[in-house]
Length: 107
Image (cartoon, rainbow, N blue to C red; front, side, top):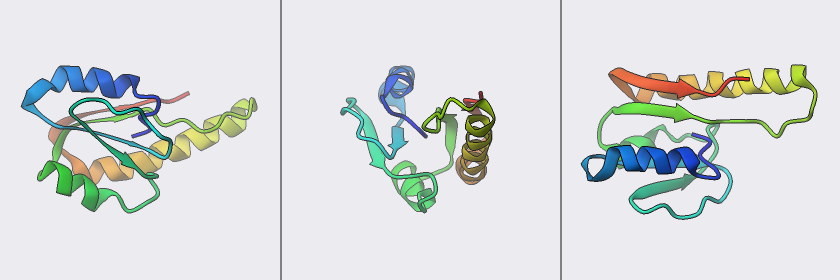
């Protein structure tokens, strides 16, 4: 989630290789990455069904690199960042397999 410009998505794709699937989700355009399904959507959209349609099961890892458009006001930016992570965690609770791993960016 929050995969633009695509760096972490490339890393995930290399780790998974041909043995799994990788989906990138972002509201911004992301250059095509071989073997990766890109979903142009917001985490506030109803994306759970789309995630399960692609993976067919609960997933082993969630990477959230979500970030607000920073204002320069740390208190505001931090508050928005925490809200984004809260929304990402709600999605993660529904799609992450038991004993799966999740990484969230927080600042």
